[in-house]
Length: 182
Length: 187
Image (cartoon, rainbow over all chains, first blue to last red; front, side, top):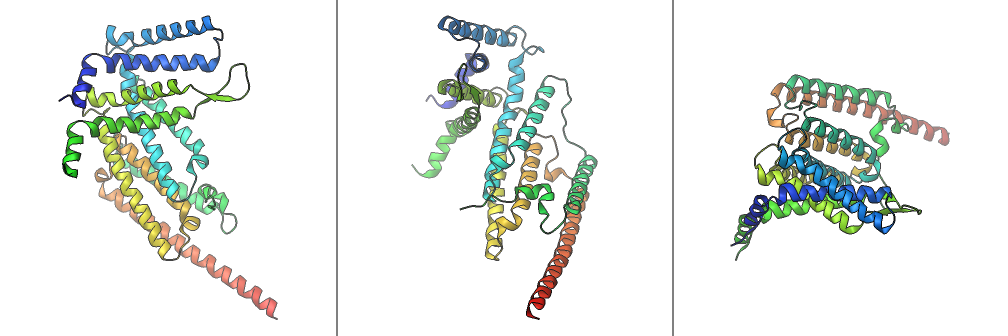
């Protein structure tokens, strides 16, 4: 019986997963970038846009079969980075869902924080994958304790300097207090 | 065919292992790409990428994210088991938050208004912690030493006591002010 495992193995063996899919991804992204920039307008130029996109994407994936594992093999980099990005998406959706339970519109209130965090994390992943940065793994308990102590220190300072009574908005998280529900 | 057989069938055919994660990642990527808007060339207003391009990009991203699970299962780039455990923890957290909200609501507290911001900060910290621990950037809770956990619990209790004491003194001051105002009006 041809189940999904067989089908997936067939795709792997024929190179669809490791060659065709990265090609399509890079082609689509380059094509979308041309579309968004609006460089090519008339019909002939649009055909040119397709040819340039195909050429760029083909050249981009070519190190993966010419020199696999070399530092120019961006397919390997993509295969290392993209799963973590997927997990980041899942985590962001989980946070939005859980915060929604407490009555906040996190997508509006915290968008800038999420953006900054996501950009830093994705840059970190790419730097690790390109061997520019060493991965941070298993921080020692001392460092964890120091970070926790710093966070608590920061919270205490924020609490003390935040004032009391009607001046609650001085504490930074209080400004996300609650969106009134109808 | 009972439900167990159906679930076993779905598991054995790879539906649970490949199709469901693919659908999840595809949906998330499609959602993310749909948020991209750009200025229409030579015109006013913003437009989205064409629907077929969005679909293709989302499918390609989702397959690339799944690929390490196919080609190098069990490696640190294989996120499918991580997503499964992560989502289980998130579901447990959601049940915990909902239970606390229900219990506090039963006790007559306006939970959203009074404690919503604390819940929000706690949830964000906890989910980020789970996320980083599954990526092995920081140790999981089970690997943190007992001394650290004891210190954190002690600090939390200390902060709660301080909050309780200062909160009580604020309430007392407010009550005194209210009584004085009433007395002034009566006389």
